Length: 128
Image (cartoon, rainbow, N blue to C red):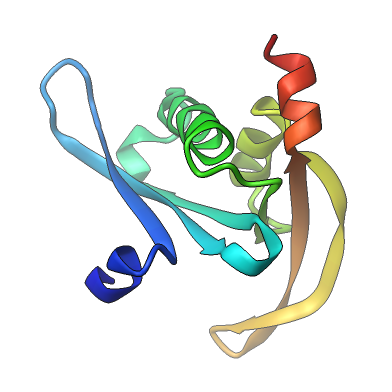
């Protein structure tokens, strides 16, 4: 990842608890410069699910993506059977754009992905 970071293809942040700075996850944006868009991805350790850490980190990286990286669109996907993940996207203002049917194979099974996106204009209109 160091090469991708140095070439501006990805930004990665650790997610830490404010109380004790313990590591609880990661969040990143894979940048597609020629399209001015970035794909958001995150992982939160299971003991920290449902406590708002993912939502807080996602809001912060969306702000970073639009205001520091000057992206036009931020998008993300999630397994359709992972409502915790796509609910974070909805809480952070991403709009459901569709389902990518049998888009990935996991543990020998084809899985649908739900696709969400947020445009810079939408972000600016809701964060003035």
